[in-house]
Structure formats: structure tokens, C-alpha cells
Length: 113
Length: 116
Image 1 (cartoon, rainbow over the protein chains, first blue to last red):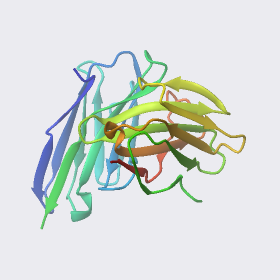
Image 2 (cartoon, one colour):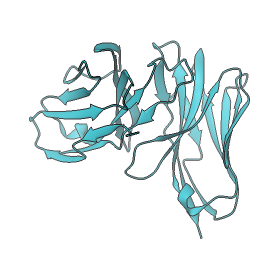
Image 3 (cartoon, rainbow over the protein chains, first blue to last red):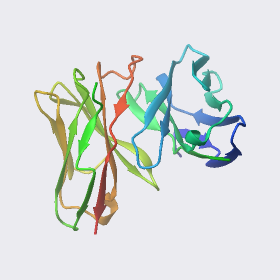
């Protein structure tokens, strides 16, 4: 079982709408949790970084939340744009495995006009 | 400043051959890490180098190897290629190299490897 589970696997929304992507993890202990955006055929780009003591972090229209007690994180996208179409990857930095990055499988978001 | 540069961007190899991929990190970054991305397995950590020393290694067979030079540039090598090695290989660099610290990890555009 993957230590970082993301849902939904894929999502289609209309331009201008909001959406929330989920990330549940079992990695423990962990130092920080990151969200990345990956456009098709490109490398991932960092959106947010949260330490275990932070609850929320914003980057423009992207807002990430973290609940370390329930081991859940979410990425909320406000007023979606066509350019938001991409894969969104949740990454947990595991302190158990020598600070390795543990990746979720990603959520594929498609924004339609 | 220039981002993480990976070469080549695309390549096709035959089973049994070997391949070398190159990565130039952002200027001043001393940590370089490598990842394999496939549709079935997602992103998986290969190894990480810091100041020419391998600090961390993922669960990949010994056919996968890497090195880092004194100018922080890195190469990864895959020997005796198998069909399952077809993937996007991503290189990432960071300044401090310790992901416990809130330092951003910057990814390159990747090298697409197809093994036929």
C-alpha cells in the first residue's frame, strides 16, 4: 500500500469553478509535506511547502491545508483556469527513510471551458 | 537564473544497451537527486548526491548508478537496459540538500527514455 494516497485519481471541472484535491498519508515521522504541479511532458513545479506544525499555506489561487493529527492534506484551487490543467502531486518528506521524498500517484485535473 | 537542465530530452535505446543522462543543477545548488516516473509507478526516488557523495539511495537494482562532479553536475547511468526502464527520468536540485528544511526542490524537464 502506498504511503501517500491521493484522491480523486482524475477530475474534470469547468473553468472558473473551485476544486479540492486530497492527500492522505501514513508516512511517520515526517518533516514537511509539499504539493507540486506537473504539466504534461514537463517537470514538477513546487506549489507549497508545509512543515508538520503548519495548517495552511497559500500560493496565489492555490491553498494547501495540513492536519497532522488525521494525516490529511488538501489542495484547494480557486477560480480555476485552463492553465490549471495538470497533474498535482503530493509529496511527503519521510524522516524514517533518510529524508527521502515519498510521492503520491497524483491527481490529474482537467479544466474545461 | 537558469533552471535545472537535463540532456538529452529524448532518446531511444535497444534492450541490453546502456545509457547516460546528464543534469546541470541551478547555479549554487549542491544537491542533485534523480527520479524515475512511469505511468504505472508514478515518481520514484533513485538517488541523491551532495558535494560529490551519494547520500541516499532508492530501491533500484545496481544497473542504475550515478555520480556527481565537483561542479555539482550529475550523471546517471543505466546499464543492460530492459523494456521496463522506459520512463521519464527527472533530475532535481536544491541549495541545502536537506528536505527537512523548507528549501524548494527544483525539477528539470526530464529525459524521456524509450527502450525497444
